[in-house]
Amino acid sequence: MDTLRMKTDFANLAEIEWECRSLIYSTWKPSKPWVSLSYESQYVYPLALRAFWEEYEAQIRAEILRWQALGWEPAEPIAPSGLHLQRREYTEQGIGASDVVLWIATLGLALLVTLLLGGNTRHYVVFEPLEYRILMLRHVVNPEGDPPGLSENCPGHRAVGD
Image (cartoon, rainbow, N blue to C red; front, top):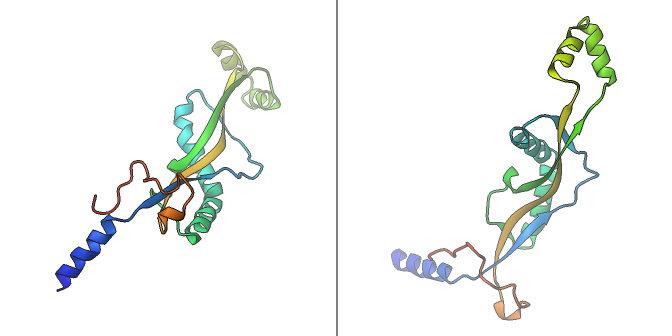
């Protein structure tokens, strides 16, 4: 008898309709950019991503909890991969106070190396947070009463049993 009941419950689960929306978090505090002195931004991108995730994870999870209170559930893992960053690069030339201190501290050796390598050009990579995006799902309770477009099946998501 328990076996028959399980099949019936599974059949009912397969008929559940899903509603989906993307939760987009973009309420950043006055964000400080993450800056690195680098020639290859591909290597510092994971570091910037991790730094922003550590800074904003609590706020992002709080927003997800607000959605969960309304019946929504994340359809994908809550992870740094949902964070999207904007990248800018710029080059700076010139002599700064730190250069002078370095030259004095190395008794001119750093100045000699700087002149041999062609000057004081520095390449900076700057990252700023754009948004955190995650797909959220909930069961459609009354598809006839929802506004148009809300009760559509979620792309790439299959109900249990499909």
